Length: 468
Ligand code: GLU
Image 1 (tube, rainbow, N blue to C red):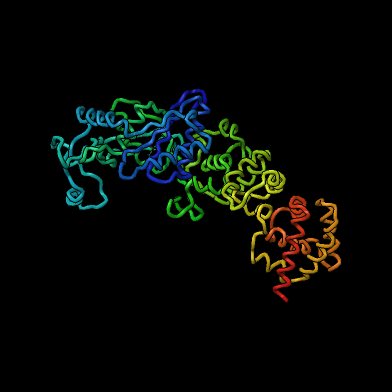
Image 2: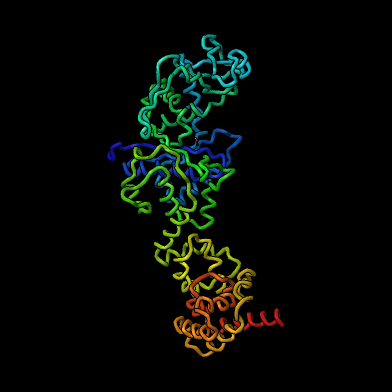
């Protein structure tokens, strides 16, 4: 594909469930192709399976695309397949009139009885029976018995399909509703689609759809069937087994920038030894022809690490605003002036935005959060009470600065033969509730003398009541 030719691509999801990472990757590949060629991305909601559709899923798709950075200005549509019913019916009539489709009243059982094989395709029984339309009659495409259909696939060269193996497939069911194969092909034709970029599971449909394009007098599109996405066990990602909903990732605090960079790597890689690359570079460098055909491993750990890197790249004000939705849902009131002080300390330590809440809660709760394991670890062995008592004394009149607080606790530790790391633990748990968290002395500085001393005293009281 030359980068100057103007192309029309489309993303054509069926709104039959939660929007997942595979759909998002297809949308992104198409979007990038449109962007880099000055072409157009069409969003088409394939909502013809009325029993499985819901407006809620459609909204989810549109919301997720917007989250990834694609909004109505970036694509044409959304169009709804259900609005094209007249075009689908007209195409079916054209195919009947030109002799390329015929009515058939065979049931599945009839076909199996004749062929003696559960797995064999349709045997062409009604091809020459000249049936009129009527109840219980489906419409089948008259696939050539001979020859081959060759599709041009940008990832796979020119796969060749023997026509003899492509049965006379159904294009309209006995109830008159058209099938996916026809509706999807007719919409692509009428929307002027030049490149069909979609999941590999649709590769077997390509020759059938190409035959439809040709029978309806259109020049077929260029195809690109992108590889399946698999989990760590090399199983195809599944809604039931794997975490695939884009919405879940958003809710955990993945950044859209990290997500879309990562999704672009499912089958493709940028030049050099890089994986984390600015979006502009992706748009510049992506070539659909370079996408691999082997299954792409969706590595959540790696995505998480990406996300941490993306979080660290944010200017701190952006980081603070990205944290806001998570803080709003937190079970405490946040003083933004205090949060602004904690944010730079936290930004280097979270991989997911949702991790911000347990990292800063100590500063906003009246009492430190309770964590029994941390308590046991830091308070029930070693000279915890002596350290806390020493800290109380040392901090009562200390200049309230992190470096000063550190030096004083170092001295207290030394008096009990403890290195700073060990001496810190009881103080950290007394003040923040947990053994791990933000740098301790900066945290104390932000929390202030009064609250720090009150928490140390409360921890000592608890220790005394447990032992006394
Ligand atoms: N609605 C189909 C799907 O979601 C579209 C396939 C295609 O892109 O042609 O699988």
